[in-house]
Amino acid sequence: MAQQETDQQINDGFVVDTEDCEERERAHRERGTSRPITVVGNPVLHKECQDVTEFGEELARLVDDMFASQRTAEGVGLAANQIGVDRKVFVYDCPDDEGVRHVGVVCNPVLEELAPELRVLDDSNEGCLSVPTAYASLARPDYAVVRGQDAQGNPIKVRGTGYFARCLQHETDHLYGYLYIDRLSKRERKDALRQMAEGTPRYPVVAND
Image 1 (cartoon, rainbow, N blue to C red):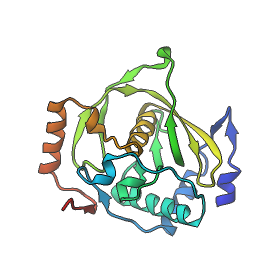
Image 2 (tube, helix red, strand yellow; image 1 turned 180 degrees about the vertical axis):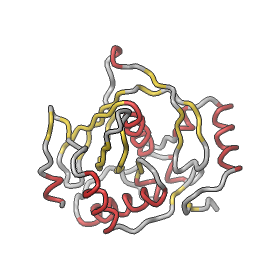
Image 3 (cartoon, rainbow, N blue to C red; image 1 turned 60 degrees about the horizontal axis):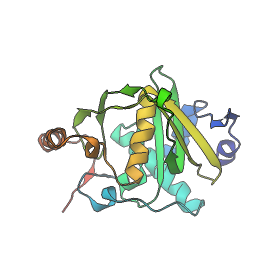
């Protein structure tokens, strides 16, 4: 499976992440162990993560655990610090606005700056596994390009539109110490934290003692 992902077809310089999605996601998930989700207030979520420099078995195990944890929490994206690991890597299993499923891994992501003509904002609702049960409207560009590396260290580019573009921006933010609520007004952030306090997570979380 790793070799298949290494040799994955490239289209116009962008990784093809829409093929064999079910098979690839299941393989990761079945090898992995689901871990509880860290929530807002946990220090690991509020600082920039360390770069991934070793692309070996330890990283492969982490990626497998991340896919398992993402499935348990019914999420569409998960950053390593959301399961308490201080490394710049995120996984995703996310549809775009056309319903096309995207599955992949990005290490050391960098979000590309968009040309002004490409910055069409979408102010849809956004949520986060680390802010369980809370949602808020947040304007983000409806197109995103992320550069990084795959789990074997090969350079990749990933692009997304609509909901998937939001996912790519959201997960990259995580690895630089930002939650989506940090981009809200003070009033909106307070409301999101109130929603979280009043709700009950549907998945295991790490308590902030």
